[in-house]
Amino acid sequence: MGIPGSGLAKGLAVTLKTMTKRSVTAQYPDAQPELPPRSRGVIALFEENCTVCMLCARECPDWCIYIDSHKETVPPAAPGGRERSRNVLDRFAIDFSLCMYCGICIEVCPFDALFWSPEFEYAETDILDLTHERDKLREWMWTVPAPPALDPAAEEPKEIAAARKSAEKAAAARAAQEQDDKQDLKQDLKQDNKQDQKQDQDEGREQRPGEGDA
Ligand code: SF4
Ligand code: SF4
Image (tube, rainbow, N blue to C red):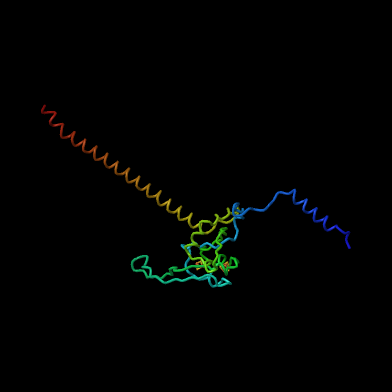
């Protein structure tokens, strides 16, 4: 059994200790919290990347992703080619009253169409309003932070390598075209000079007999 009053003394000691420390309470919403950049606030959709493959909706453990789409026929890219069909997104919604923020949908998306945004201020008074449609998910895309810098020793990502190669090819083709244009210009100038010289010589020959007459 402890000494009577020791609990009170301990409590007072804790009070005195914390009284001398700086308060860490953030006065939200007057003061915005400083969240880590990778906070799981809400899921944002970059719909241009979505191919309606349905993987996210199938893998979601809560079945809270709703996707509707229709098929469209795309004309052939080149004459004589085959028509292709593609999925067009009609609806993409997430019910955040069911979502458990596991991040599986973001992990499984093969086309980088889903991202975590640190945005968290989307509380609603009606639970039904927590189902957010594609326009709202798209708006959250602008709050997604830029990806962290790559490790200097990391391999170049294949998308960047492909983009760099095609940019280099285009630059080389442009340089070759410019070179050809310069050569053509030089040849044209040479030809013009030759023609001028020939014309001068012809004019000189025509003038000589006349000089004799004078
Ligand atoms: S975070 Fe998890 S629960 Fe929420 S939508 Fe994605 S897969 Fe479903
Ligand atoms: S997994 Fe990605 S690409 Fe496929 S439907 Fe979901 S968001 Fe769209």
